[in-house]
Image (cartoon, rainbow, N blue to C red; front, side):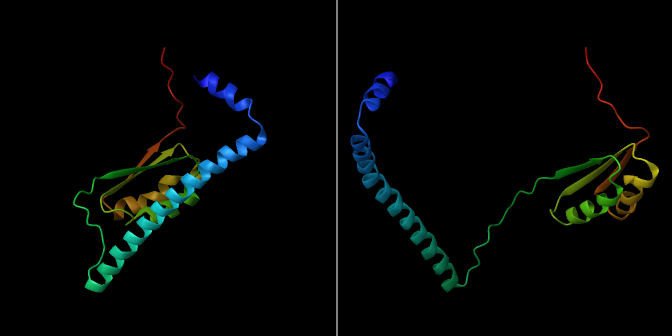
Length: 138
């Protein structure tokens, strides 16, 4: 069936293809445009009604799952503090795990992250003594 359709379409002149597309556009474009105008009007009327009645249109979430963010790096000591500060308070039940993968002493992520780990209960700082290599399974 698909091959027949391609065969039929390939034998049409450019004028016939243009007329076919014009007919499709004359039917489909107004249908989608009217549907969009209808939805925008409904949303606007709903927001206007909430504003007139003085009700805030805020969604209330009853369920707030816990989320864990893992910050792993090698020699990222200078940027880990900014990353932690941007995450603190971003979500109610957020746990942050900082993993230093054997960084050099002058760029150690542990030195920058440890004060945050002591100050906040939801921040865990882990360090490896040497840079890890993925184990190979046989």
